[in-house]
Length: 282
Figure 1 (cartoon, rainbow, N blue to C red):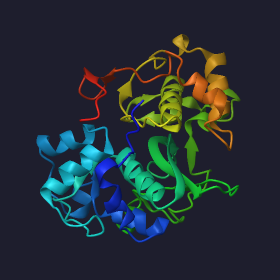
Figure 2 (figure 1 turned 180 degrees about the vertical axis):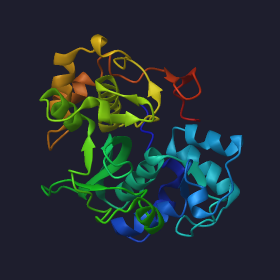
Figure 3 (figure 1 turned 90 degrees about the vertical axis):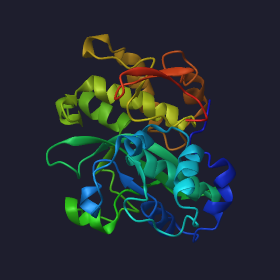
Figure 4 (figure 1 turned 30 degrees about the vertical axis):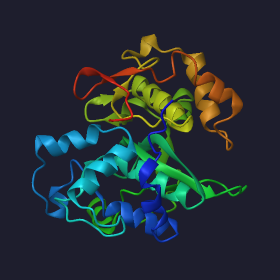
């Protein structure tokens, strides 16, 4: 399984960043802009070529593209039109890589944020991190939340310590809906929502915990459309395992090899509506 967050040949560039989570997140914000928010930062509408950058899976390939355009060190912020186009997944991917290089435990988490659209839990990715070899509880970091975006969305909390009431990992969202504490139709993105959407994010979260952080719109295995197709007991167990403090546990890693969960050699890119190879070259 390919670890998409492996910086590969660019590890030394991350090691040169200031050594704290705030500095790493700030540096990542200087390299990336969300594909839907270029106008917020004064940028031009993205071209089809730039939009294709959001479909690059491995971080090392993303950085190849970025540095081919501007070879300066990663700590030097680019203009909005020089930045790499991406999504919340890409902000998280790069931040995870930077923190790991600097000795932190860090991983991407897939779930839902309350802070982008009132009354809805929006499909989103963040970083979970803590000091290495520590029993310290994991903290959530949203690397996409720079000062400009925080003002735009009216966010007052510290993005280096996102409250777990504001971001629910997919397993938590699943359990709340299964207990009747939350409405699954409030979880999703655009006109896509429901228990099936939460289930798909559980699969993506399992893959990320196992070390293969896919695109937010990659579809494979146990991901299905209608709720009637969901294997509820299986997903109940997965949700519980993803919420354990020491995840991924041996049991979860074993389940991650199940054909319903394991990332295959080819996945369906739901945005491009085509099957694509999961390839290190992106």
